[in-house]
Every structure is written in C-alpha cells, then in structure tokens.
Length: 452
Image (cartoon, rainbow, N blue to C red; front, side, top):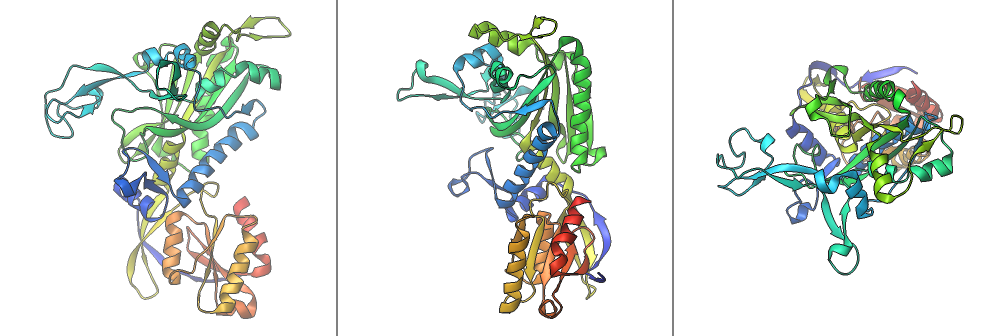
C-alpha cells in the first residue's frame, strides 16, 4: 500500500466565509434551493436538494442515535402536526404567543420593533405605527366549511405533542423518573421578519427532548443536559471557539421557566441560538391536566408520592444545526497543481458521521467500456455499506473539485492500470493524498477509515 502521488500542495489556507458563499455553494451543489423557485419563490421557505437532504437526515440521525439509542432513559415519539385546538389554549399559545409588530408608514412593510435601528431597513423611513401584538401561529381549517368549529393550527413547536402523550408513554413503557421523550418534526411560525437563509424561517424542523424529573433533581438535571448538548456539537465537528453558552437573564425567561441556557454559534451574521435548554418546571403538565380534566401526575409506586414532574427541555433546530455544520465545514485554500498553476479549492470538511456522501467512484476514461464496467461494479459493491455515488460527467480534476464541495470523504479512481493490476486510486478529501489499494481489499480499507 504505497502512496503513489499527491494532487497538489497547499499554498495558503483561507477560512473566511460569508453567507453569500454558503448560499451560492448550496445552490450550485444541490444542498438547498429556494422553494417554488420557478414561480418566483416563496419567501423564507427552502427545499433541501439531494445532498442537503442527506446532510439534514444525517444531523437528525446523529441526534436520534445520541439521545435515544445510546441512552437507557429516553424513548422516541412522532406526533401529528395538527392537534386539538384546546392543546394551544392550555399551553398558552393562543393567548400569549405573540410578537410586537410595527408598520412603516412610508413603504407599508411590517417589522418587529426590536429588529429596527431607527430606520426602516426597506426604504429608510423613520415613521412607524404604534406596536401591536401579532400571534405567530398559522391557522388552518379542518372539514369542508371554514368556520370557528373547524379552526385549528399548524403546531408552533413539537413539545406539546409529548406532553399530551405523557400518560400514554407511562402506560406503555412503565418508565420510572427520571426519563425523557424525544422527537423530531416540522413546526410552523408566522415569523414577522424571517431571514439569514435557513436560520429563521416560517417552516422549520425541531429536535426536542422533554425530560421528566422529580422537582428536587431538576436543577442538577438541567446542568447535565446543558453539558451533554454542548458536547454533542463538538463531537460532530463544530469548532469550540465558535460555540458558547449564554444563560438567559430573568427578564428573558418565559413565565413558566426558572432557567434557560442557549447554545450559540458564531455565524457570519453574528452569534445566534442553535439550541435552548430550559427548566420548564411543572407548568405544562399542570396546564394540560387542568384543561383536559385528566390527571397527569406521576405516582411513585415505592413512596406513593403523587406529583407533577418538572421538565427539562433541550430544544434545538435541525435547520439551524445543519446550517451551522455547513458554515463551520466550509474551507477555501489556494493550491498549486503539477503545472504550477494556482487555484482555489473549496472543500466541506464535514465529519464522517455527517458527510452526505462517503465515497465517489470515478472512471478516468468514460469512453473505455472496461473501466466504466469495473467502476460501476465497485460502486454497486460499496453502496451496500457506504453512501456511494458514481460520476463520469467531467474530467477527473473537475470531478475531484465537485466531490470536495459536497464533503465526500474518499474518491476512488479507476484507470487503465486498474484493469491490469486490479488496484484503484483512493484519494483522501482533507489531505488530497492518494493511495493504490487492491479492489478486493477496498471494503476492509474503507471500513477501517470510517471506524477511526
């Protein structure tokens, strides 16, 4: 197993990234598209392309594996987007889930007053209406007639689906405190001023845990979840100096919460929240118990104590996490090729767990039928164990750059020599080093790489 050659060498790394570069890369390489683009697009709604869908799924799978499969005290759930309207009355969303809004008297556009800096960002006007409350829930109607009887809402969070299933979980899993329930799913909020690409949107996906514990243990439990969730982002590759914890001031806390700490990431547009870990006390179960008439208290079979558990809620955004991993992985470097020419290599240094494609199989000569046949056979063999793609749509240099930009870990090149010695060239994404590996040892070699 000898190192045969290296594609080029580094001249100058450049880690400066702005949102324009990220948006351009996402469109160019099929990560994220504007929703309904052929009709002019729908504001603040985004579609995930082939590579984006894989990356987003990998983020959710990594979360699910960590918080459920690798723990003994958390189970999963998948609840409906539509819920009984009384759910939102009990949770307080109908009465209190509001933002303040003002209208610019010049251009008539609407903004949150806390997002203004004296001037309208659209037209520069300085004259605004008085602030008024604006409910963020999106309404819809069930049944053939649009009236109050059929009025319901697209859920603004996934948490309430967990709370209303609290008794079902207890009855079917026989859990003892402390235990958690986790789910991912779509939520909807009629944001007044969405923006920053996929960071703040009206349709988004959450990954939430509601962790039920005895009130006396809630504070310690809250601290443990803050540490665990912070370390999850580090484990998947986010740079530590780009992450921070920010505890909420008392005037920021929701009325039912005694403490909340945000995990923030430094995006090109500034420090912003990836996930919040809150101590929601016993508010939710008490409210649903009162409104529904069902007793949602937990009974300890040993002490016979009956009480409403406190809830620790780690609540993160799938789209925000995916965007953070994209930004953090984006890297530019100036390299010099064999002919002394300089060019910029863009590479996504995503972790092995998150990279949307693990392996690309590339024939050096697509007009050589024997090379193509061997390359396609290798692809078919490897795709049983790894996410693998085949591409022969450009010269090998362009194919390498294309795979670098989507974060593919290894490129396997099949050439004329491969037909004789049954070896292929395996190229490493990050180092660009190339090794000749025998075809019959490829699976073993790659499995070892992904386990280290």
